[in-house]
Image (cartoon, rainbow, N blue to C red; front, side, top):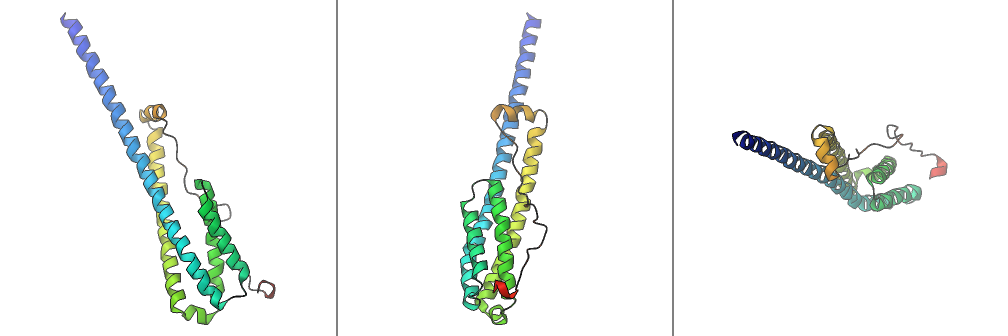
Length: 192
């Protein structure tokens, strides 16, 4: 009888240990998954801030450089593409296009000293520069929590729990091909 009772107690301890391991691993995965979602929300928050600044910046530049219609159209299209993007990959691609168009828009301002002296333009440019820095920081933070999550779901024994409950690898926010190259700004007579 004593051996049977010892066997039941050992079995109960093993089952309790396994149960605690499953609960602990699952809860850790939920916390990590929510951290990824929160970090992505911060990226989207900063992208939205930039999109809100763009119409004001474009309108300010339009007042000084009305003949630069091509760049205004590019910025508007890139902004609309980012607004309509669904997946992380689509948002990353649209974000890169918008960044390039904004760079060209700000380069145009270099040709208009009176625009650079305009207080509204300076304020919008400063806000946009600050937002670009926050976007870069948010992307980095997002990629860090994605790395942590992806590492966690690949470690043993969490990999078993992750597959049981459907936790899957998250995508990193990556720059588009060619993003390392500076955008081309052409002030030749045919573009004006």
